[in-house]
Image (cartoon, rainbow, N blue to C red; front, top):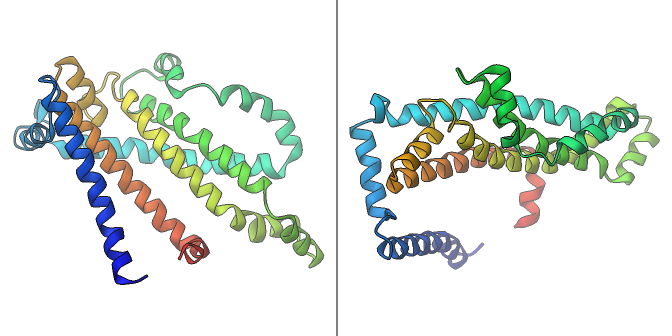
Length: 258
């Protein structure tokens, strides 16, 4: 990559961000209720200097991080395991796929009343379960897709060399499916953040979703934008970590893109 291309790659994201900020400023200038970038920054500083309900802003962020990371870890383990089982165990798929097909289209928020009745609203359990449901479906679908679409030539080569079913799974099928599985994790993570905001709008006194819900009650659009930006930055950070993991596990993808 030459120098001019590197400069272009650096400038384009800056231009896009500036365009969004300009559009946001213009929209706020046309509507007195809508907070603009400056008001949002001032509200952010105010939250740091004068925490809402005495809870520092970083505690809200860490609380949300804790909930989504616990849900993400459980969803990753269970989702990948079920996706692999659907892909390599035909009998298991015939039994469980109809049930999964019924549950898959249901939005995570539809489960909130049942989960609240089941585990209550105190503690983090109900929030983590809702976030888990939002993540796990995408992980299962992508893992199953990756396992099912393994190149038949690779599978035939493994069988010809005398590899066992376990060796074919661990040495061929799973490594070949890693990019698709990671794509499912990224998709699930995005859905998980949406579920988190809704989950934290229940009876809870901390978290980014709590701030957004509080802004809605008091028509505080600056606080709403602070919450939205915190969600965007937090989600981007976790996605960046997954991208680094993908670069580590699938270096050939980045070699092909050069």
